[in-house]
Amino acid sequence: MKLDYLRISLTDRCDFNCIYCRPRERVQLLQREKILRFEEIMEFIKLMLPEGLEKVRLTGGEPLVRKNTIDLVSMITKINQIRDITLTTNGALLEKFAKDLKNAGLSRVNVSLDTLNRKRFVQITGCDKLPEVLRGIKTARDVGLGPVKVNMVILKGINDTEIVDFINFSHKNALIPRFIEYMPLNNVGLKHWYVSNEVVKKIVERNWGKLKLTSFSGNGPAEYYTTKETSFILGFISPISESFCHKCSRLRLSAEGKLKPCLASDYELNVRKALRDKDYSQIKKLINLAKLYKINKSTSFPNFNNAGRFMFQIGG
Image (cartoon, rainbow, N blue to C red; front, side, top):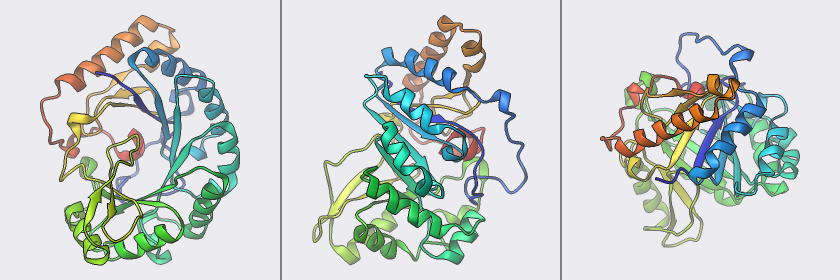
């Protein structure tokens, strides 16, 4: 198996408090000394290169709240084999950092945007920063961090009436909208929030005609479509209704150095100690164990209640 895609969480801290990402009870954040240093992250990336690594995505928490993230982007850019460096963000700090990220070598950004309604934005994220996010998206697009993808987690009874508005907004602003099925990681949230992307597709087709698969591709599990009557592209990530385990080639590295081969499993391998001991043969063994887990994984229907960690701890 070729492991061509690594998602790296830079921090478990975030300036948002999204209702589907964190549990209601307070969870202790990582102490600074437990978080991987940039030099350690770079060592791990280099050790992944023989596995076919070509694509790196930086996540969090919110990756832009970590100091000097732009420096890490510059460091990764110098590795010739890495052809794609992307970042997932809530967008609130993009207006400030987008130009420097582009200059450092970042390819693209994905921005979480679950609503265009300011009051509902506060309900979902716990903060009143929709204007900042919208300005950040515009800045990212203007400096060339595109195509900018905007991710909407559909939550029944909260934002499921905004699907048409979300597509219109994206089309008007030359963005790629993506609809993500709500994943109840470790029972965070309410079961009745779940909406299948099949429902979303029917809404799209009622308004714009038959959906047609397109050859447009990305790094992750999204399937992209155009509509019969228009040319705009939209994506669907459907981990519940259409499991994509069989085609997953990614590993996740958490902020404290836990290597996780599957989002919906509590199986993880601690590479931090080996990195700090400079025990590179041990790190290779741990990478091989992660690969074997992916190869031997028996189920194609992940149980997100067994993830072991919450989304902000794993890296969204």
